[in-house]
Image (tube, rainbow, N blue to C red; front, side, top):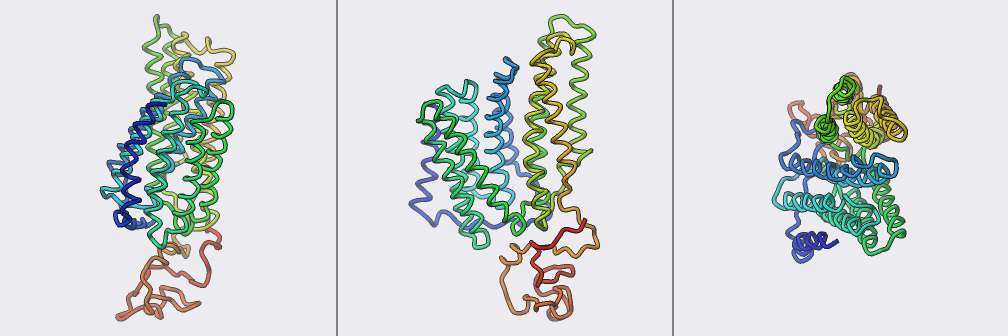
Length: 416
């Protein structure tokens, strides 16, 4: 718990600056969902690297005690850690700004993740778990400040305020839980996590008007998946190191374990193309996008279980030594990974044929453009028609391909 006190000192300057000098918080430009060449930045990669350490730290006790109670602890902590990563990733893909304030906020969130990991090895009823809650709350408070900064942009105000209000309320409950004894602490954790997730579910109605970047966010998810795949490989390596006397069954379990991880990599990146572009152009796309997002959670839990299961099989001398509870956990890992990959392969988000009348800009992007009489299409007239062209016959405003403006695109069905 004392570790979290240092974090509050680090966060204080950012909070005080926002309160004392509103001018220091400038409007954040909204990232275009169709902006070309949007790639993961170096600071985002650095941010993900911190989560490598966090995931490894949380999985340590599960490797020692491969049991259902320990898996329950690991699952809760991994969900919270992933949700912390997810919150930043969704914010960063919508609000593309790389200035000193944003970089400073990202570095402070990374510091919070370090404190989360440092307090994640002991049981959920320990003092360290209270420190974990404080560190997570600090990370969410920083994210709330970033959304308040983004709310100064008129086109993003409603979405940003909803996220800030929900995440702020959840952060307050997380802070309260740190001073609450067990078992009431568990009830507060459940409440806080429900508010966190509920906020994202409610705000999902803005996904069509302000969609995440179609290429950037899937790339972020792909990188986080590589983190879990790497942890599974590390687990196999530890099993090889822990094998006192090599035998054919032990060697076969090690080889099959590596082959399993490689097969999951192929299924994710090639078989299902889960890291491919995810365009959100209508409500059906939005629902598929939500399913695609949350299908990653069972995938990550199954990957962790599978990696540690292979490690224990190698140390024990082969798969024939994996019995009882350990065998059931390994079976659960296969079910989780298989089910998640099935969902990821079944949700084809934004698969629109080239002949479909799809605009290149979302309604939110169009609303944020300066309006002039020459750029506003008349009702019932396609934006690409002659009536919508300026002098010389070139489009004066939006770059559309046969879009009928009288039909709200949020209510159109996606072409498949």
